[in-house]
Length: 420
Image (cartoon, rainbow, N blue to C red; front, side, top):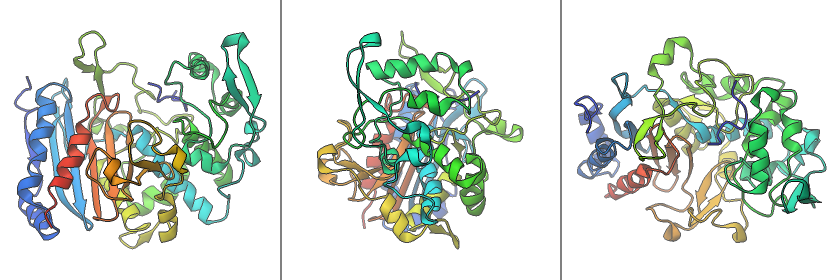
């Protein structure tokens, strides 16, 4: 059973193969929209170096501009042990790249007037009324105080709610970890009350702290729509956009396309198959649809989603959101004193379930103001640049994200290829 907290946590000849699809066509497209194909070709050797060094089993990278895919490259293996090469239709666990999709689904309800951003979440989910906030101490000596203001819905979108994930060694996160240690005691009927019983790590709205906030949005959506989260997403996003391989589990007839997931051996640092992967094996529909990290998807599906966002809520004649709604989502909502939202995100503010570049000069990457996107725990990553009209997506399956920072190289390699 997969629960809301699940995210806590020399090559063979085949593995060295690199396949760029429709190379001549994409090269012509690349040149027509201002990319140098010679410079785009710098991407493959760098990605291959991660594979050759045994850091990543395989990668799938995409670059698009002006709605046209100008680079798509599958390299290495989707499953080294089974001898399966990476391919364009490989299915990935996208973990926290689920968050922007959840946000879009929620915004369809916002557009219908189902909720307001500054509503307290307790208006819809009463479990979150009268929250307590951590002050000091541990265990039975823990000192708490009353929340000075309610958790607003926008706090959930921005991770300013005070909710956490259990990732750190803080006293509050230890409580999350204790709750996780008894998964058989968690279910749909009690998960919200058990979550709300944990203290917040800070007063609502006063700091940025990555946590289960987006997961709570999923429960809000189920309450407002009267449908399971996956059903609502299927009706409002996946079916209209033709995202045929995105969902909360992998059907039996598609399991052979699901990637193996890898991690680093704690003693040797070598890449190994991950046992007990977060959120389970994805082979069955989970009891709780994890809004913050439970989706699987493919490169084509996620590109369609990202292009819809770049287009202002529409693609191929299908409109999911209004143009101003997408502008609102992809705008920074953090006050200046919370920018950057963490030390590794210089120049970055935060929109709704995505980071937003507010100062490209402070960033460690080439970028544009207003560039937005997010990543997933297993090294999936996307950015949308409304100024240059670029989408870049990289997919791998290695936990934790950032252990091998291949996506940083990929991002700069994309921008250095722009010549017009």
